[in-house]
Length: 318
Ligand SMILES: [Zn+2]
Ligand SMILES: [Zn+2]
Ligand SMILES: [Zn+2]
Image (tube, rainbow, N blue to C red):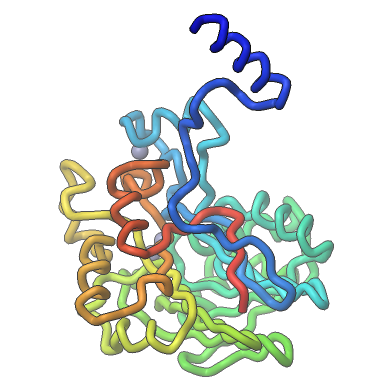
């Protein structure tokens, strides 16, 4: 018995295979990887504070403090046109430098533009990397809604990016499309959120074959004057606010102050509405959200119901 185990251990070692069971076996559903035409690439999946989260010494973050490979970057999606190499980011996050590095490695080109959703720190502060202290870019197009544009123009350090022409502000109008290439179109739409400094938008991205929506932050589906159920029905991929898994997740804090649709709520709603779960990809996870942890019961619950949990590096064809 001992000898057999030893022999098989030697054999496995010769094959380059570790003689232990994989602590993180792959999820149940296949992860999309490559695409010939335009595609979306997930560059980050965490809520604004990232993962691990500043000052968190709880069970959720302890493993990631000790092991950098477990870290997750802040929620961001890239739109990539492989024919031209042109590439755009949806949001400029605190992890901008790593996300832009990945994009450049993938496309061989500098960033073609940035579309901002709103003025919460996880969604625009990456712009600071474009300034004189770092890259010193030349007129990178930054697309934003009127209040967001005004905020950038009238508050430092962002106003300096404008005055030094590091960025070139591009006004957006709700429900009005921007044509990025003959095949790719991006359309902002307003969503209800805590709008202290700017309005908040989600984006619809239309490609030659498929379409997607990206709503990283929204208060509650019921507070919106549009039906998320109908909207999902019009696209192939819906990247939706998955900040919290369920109520009570942040102990000692009134979660009504930071409203988001809980993943459990969204799943129940979408199931009742008969929505194809394969269209739904949850993203923008708070550090407390157990779906970020490989093989947690909550993650398995989401995957078994047919919904997806966004992963960094995933590719979704357009
Ligand atoms: Zn956010
Ligand atoms: Zn934590
Ligand atoms: Zn927000």
